[in-house]
Image 1 (cartoon, rainbow over the protein chains, first blue to last red):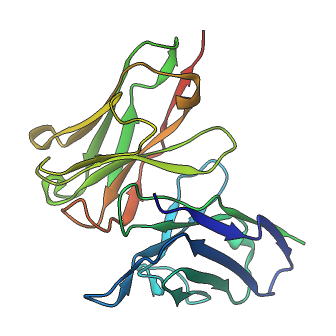
Image 2: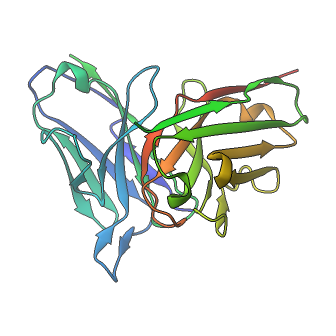
Length: 113
Length: 122
């Protein structure tokens, strides 16, 4: 199974500041035939189901603000929130969709500083 | 508007069975693969199982393989999860999630239900 790790476990950020979350997969999730990384990011707020933010490592889902961006390739990925808004305080999960089982990272909780 | 409504959760003793259902609306159900994802209390997300649009391809997490069975009824726009030999570690909120693709390959979970809680305890 592909093991997903995230760092940090949590971070405290002030409104308007940048937040950076890292995700690492135990093997590459880059599909060479189409050069796509099968890595997605989800946001989950307390008491709510997760919400798809980014897929193929860097493509924003429709309706997701452009302050959210994803980058990386192969085994190392980053989610960046350029200027944190109050509604962005949540837990963020990366997930590989390269091969079953489709594993998630343990999550990174973003709190208000 | 896409809606996914899970039901069937509850308190069950270890070793017993439970069947979860997910009623889908607002999209053409048989155009998409569907999945179950669970979240233990205070913990992270775990993909449990997925099924392709025509039930031709099915996958399970190792933790539930041989005990859980996913199925779908496209005529009823419904997804199911039959859970047998339940264990305490199966206690979780079970989400039904729609895939953006028809096949069980490189899924994106673009819509989620609110979940149904399964508690396994004596």
